[in-house]
Image (cartoon, rainbow, N blue to C red; front, side, top):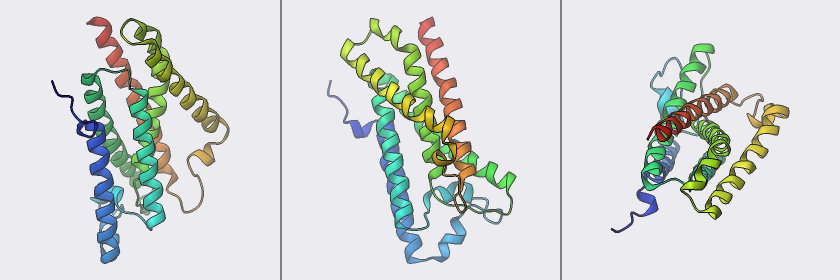
Length: 218
């Protein structure tokens, strides 16, 4: 059986589509700045809880968010390199659905807490992806001993090293430098960053726990 190209997997299909929509939307807004106000997230534009995830203040803002999202996707793929093809597809759909839903819900929460605010950019989705990556790394360290029965030792070592690196990088920042990690400063939509990261981490831990339960039963 011919192996499917990596880009055909849900995780990478979502990433390519997501980045393409962001670039096309950025070009459209640059050509007609009036679209900026129509697509941003505000009480006057309730559809903006979704559309604002695809517009950016400037080219630098766009590049930072897209590079961050691409890096998070790559790390997520590396953390799941010991999964079967079926599991990778399932986790790809989970990742795509979770970052989108949690990113939108973070914008909904923002408007609920700060009804006079407005926001734009895909950082809510990006921080949700970071939360998923962090939770995945923690879950990997918990399930690593059980992988010895089904996975090559070298692959397990690689995933464990990646997981330790993520936990060792994120944990000190979250504990001692949360303001820097979440970019808590004037003019930055940091509530969406926090809500995205926390919701992504929680939903990822729940998902990993359900997978572990299912696998133990089977």
